[in-house]
Image (cartoon, rainbow, N blue to C red; front, top):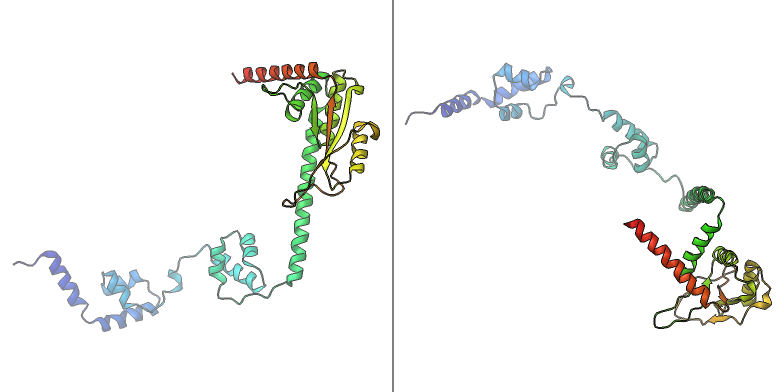
Amino acid sequence: MPMTHAYGKNACQNSRYEDFEGLRERAVALRRQGLSLRQIRDELKIFNNDILNRLVKGEPPPEWTKRPNAKDDLREKARELRLQGWTYDRIQATLGCSRSSVSLWVRDLPRPEPRYSPEEQQALMREGLARRRAAEHEKRKASKITALEDIGELTDRELFMAGVALYWAEGSKSKPYDRRERAIFVNSDAGVIKTYLAWLDLLDVDRERLNFRVLIHESADVEAAHRYWAAIADVDVSVFAKPTLKRHNPKTVRKNTGDDYHGCLVIGVARSAHLYNRIEGWWSGIVAQAQARLG
């Protein structure tokens, strides 16, 4: 069978590379003279990359053949900073490289001694947290001031609409199966109470028709709550009806405790069936107009 061209070519190459040790000595010598792999290949006529690499195995390439690495400077800087006691995170943030790169570059260096004791670390963390919370507080405060200025002066109609929505959200409502038709409002927020009272004044509801009662936990200071709500509603403490006390459930943990807890104020309007029905109608009108805007 005639020899194929490919087989003949390989045979020639094999015979050429039979004296491997001799070729290796020449290749190593050329490598030490500063020649690149390409130059050694052309000099020795070795065109098989596998054999060429085997011939110079263990011999480092000359410096002039090494490609510059853009991260070499970063690596050296990272090692310098690590020796100064910097943490991985700090090096990463300063140099703008990945944490994995920092770890690869400096993992052979000794671990730096902690700059702070555990107690100092805790104090620094608390200090940093306090600064962050103060900054967040100032940001919230600025947002609230801007929003407050957005409201401007409240017109009668705006107060009227706000009061209707406020009552429908927080006031008692009759059910189809239980038509009580009484205007009763309950809330624990002083601002909400003041707005509701201003709304009743806008509707010309006589203050003599209002009755007040405190709804509060049995362990709270009821007298202090009466004084608090009397000041908010601008009434005398003597007008308050007997408070409704919420019994303590030993299985629950109360969070509404302390000097800031005043319970809820219940405001009822005597002879309020007509007022209540008007509120239902006003709210139905708001809903209808809102639906119309939705298309």
